[in-house]
Amino acid sequence: MAKKRFKRWINGQKITLLVILAVLLGYSIWQQSDLQKIIYPYPHRIIIEKYSALYGVDPLFVLAVIREESKFLPQSESNKGAKGLMQLMPKTAQSIAESIGDKEYSDKDLLNPEKNIQYGTWYLASLQKLFSNNQTLVIAAYNGGQGHVKEWIKSGQIDPGNIRKQDIPFKETRDYVGRVLNSYQKYIKLYRT
Image 1 (cartoon, rainbow, N blue to C red):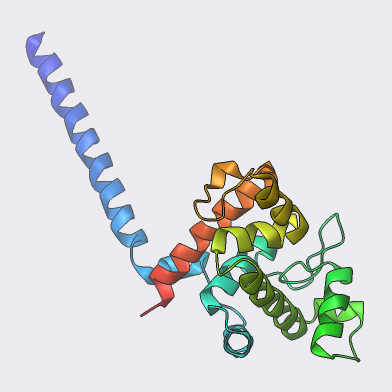
Image 2: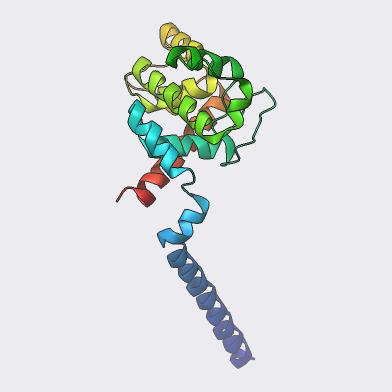
């Protein structure tokens, strides 16, 4: 009887060891950056780098925003009407067109990856200037609106010198900030060499 229990125990230990080895093997394969690049791809690289250089925004930051906004689907449209890769609202895009002197702009341009990335990158650059390159505030403003972020600062709800994600009043914006920052760190690890 003791011999049978011992054999079952040994067999259980073998199975446990095999499971541990399988997990370790899977983890080591996952750590190979080529596999991670499937989940964190870099589509539209030439366009992103072109407008990032033009407007002074880290291209990997733009990439993280695109990933979280549209999952790289250029025809994306939110239930609120935001369109394209960087999910721009038509009213925001119209304002950007006026700011950069694009007299040819129309709302259908938001589904054009190049135009969408140009406008979205310009908008990120304007938010960087407005919020002194504070990435958390920039991301929060991109999602929740710069008016809300200014109000949160003015009312003391958030301290721009010591911003903590949990201080952001809107849950959707708080979660969005976390996702973009996480993706940004992944992109830095994978593509900044």
